[in-house]
Amino acid sequence: MNDDLSEVDQEQLKRFEPLATLADHRIEQLTTLTTLNEVQPSEVIFDQNLTEKQAIFLLEGDADVTVKGKDEPLRVSAGDAKARFSLTNPGNLAATSISASKIIRIDGDLLDMMMAWDQLATAETQAAEDDSQIDNSKFLNGFHKSFQQIPIAHIGELFERVEPIPVDSGELIIEQGDEGDYFYLIEYGVARVTRKDEDSGDEIHLADLGEGTSFGEDALLSNNKRNATVRMNTRGVLLRLYKDDFLELLDQPALDWVTGQQAAALIKQGAQWLDVRHEMEFNQSRLPGATNLPLHELRQRMDELNRNQHYICYCNSGRRSSAAAFSMAKTGLKVSVLEGGLQQLMATPVKKAS
Image (cartoon, rainbow, N blue to C red; front, side):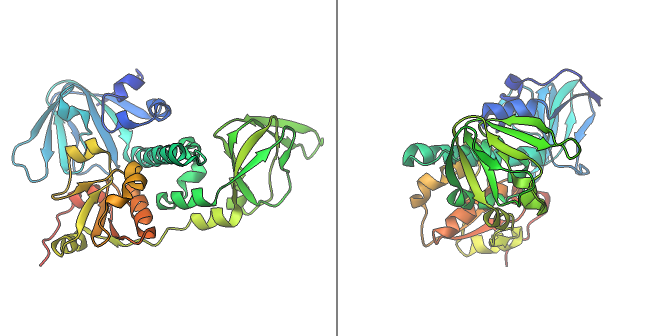
């Protein structure tokens, strides 16, 4: 297998699902985070010894895919409907190239995280349009390292606690040496970051921060004093989150996680599978009897759910389903989450409930 030095472009990535659903800025980010490989005929693309979670897309050529429960391999050719989805989708155990081919590899955890944040950003944008609320998608579209530490299920809670603060040009927001008290994100406006040199006492310009940029989390996470000064260059609005709220949201929420075997028993007792992935993901592969309610539509369609029904949410990994389950549980719905999602369920045989 050889690495191709040519870059993957955005239009190539948009040929695949669910990549095509991602916002343009995420697609642009992915172009720098993908690996393009050339594979030779009869070369193994992946098998059950694959240790890293990867999404692998067939850009050129043909491949045979071994599918769980199927005796004959599934032939996939670049450009056909089956090739729009990852060769490593849940239930696919191995793939071998049939002809000289090109494949795109993407870190599976990174892509799954992007899918979760992107659906949540879409939901927040819709809520802002419908309810004249703050467009909280700026938090999500930032895809900042500090947000990745907050469990996906707590994102809705984050938005309930964030506070919009109008600020003036020249206003001091953070001063070097102060105790950390708030985490900030710039709704609009520009801020200037400086640091005082300990030896000379001169103020050194470090950066200018614009819309969608966050700051202030380092002191909260490390419990150290502020290591820089932030002052507004322009008028604007900051979204502010208090330290205790920020740290509390880092803890994992209490959810009812169930294994595949436990889920099978619940389904036999009348529980309902609820697939919270995009519709095209649901159409491509789903659990028997499952209903599809995408995460980004959940808030608007919550009244479609039966208050007397026990739901088991699932996605590919458990990230998106945990966010859905947390929102549902807050409204009083009885809900569980499939541990490890389809990836884990399809990787191990599930015993039938007795």
